[in-house]
Amino acid sequence: MARGEWAQRWRALASIDLMAGSAGEDRMVERWRELARKLDAGIEQRPDPILDFVLDRLAPGMTVLDIGAGVGRWTVPLAARVRTVTAVEPVEGMRCVLRERLAAHDVANVSILEAPWLEADIAMHDVAVAAYSMYTSTDLAAFARKMEATARRLCCLAMRLPAHDGIIGELSERIYGEWHDSPNFIVGYNALLEAGFAPNVYIEPAPVRYWTDPTIADAVARARRHLRLEDNRHDNLITETLERRLHPVAEGYRWPDWMRAAVVWWEPARA
Ligand SMILES: C[S@@+](CC[C@H](N)C(=O)[O-])C[C@H]1O[C@@H](n2cnc3c(N)ncnc32)[C@H](O)[C@@H]1O
Image (cartoon, rainbow, N blue to C red; front, side, top):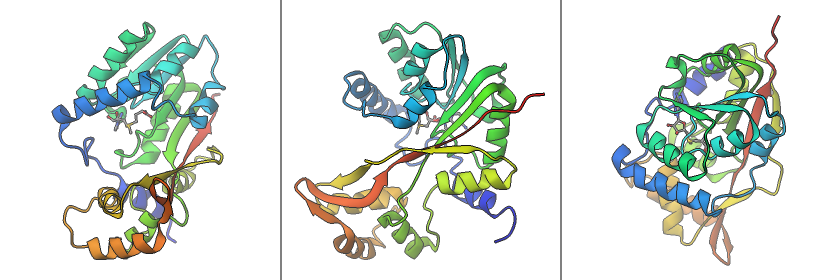
């Protein structure tokens, strides 16, 4: 494997389109509001060991950068733990729902900065966290270097960890000739090592959550979405693979693919 290959792989998988796969910002705002409502009702408030790992490393006097804050899934609990949070969020619809949530939770120690991370003009903070927001940055090392230059104490990058024997990996390999279908922890961590970082890793422990679909047709639709397939050219291959590999369960069909994450973290060395 040639030097720089992981960085190239990340670059090829990263989508520079902030809204890739979504129906356009205006139409998405209602979906984000719905997600925000579920978060606030506790419906989406599943245990999040990755967030807990980060919260355990914070102290009340700290300043924290939440890069790619979205609707504030992490911003609200971070703000409850530290002095101030700067939420960096380039998408207006996300910022709009985030502002509504901060007001609803009476959170007064968060400021919102409108910019993509690599363009953000930002003062030094104690901690920089980026949860699942680096997938649109083709240069992951530059993303991490900017975090390191902006955080005195701690940098954390949370990324998705795909199942080693997942169906999406198998289909991606057969359709695209590449097991990785999107940017993830495996590619990201290796790209960071290759760039000279030597970060620590905490992986979400089992039990992990698995995808379940009520019907095979729903599972085909999920596979198409993940593989960004816009037509039905590969439906036979997908259906045959799903019928062979999905586990029938009471609620429908369970995938071997899991929803699991890892956080890559390090303490910037300062002279
Ligand atoms: C998958 S969401 C995650 C949101 C939140 N961190 C969470 O864990 O729920 C990714 C978010 O990152 C934002 N984002 C994407 N690219 C970004 C970039 N280059 N700089 C900052 N934010 C970015 C998106 O607008 C979106 O709100």
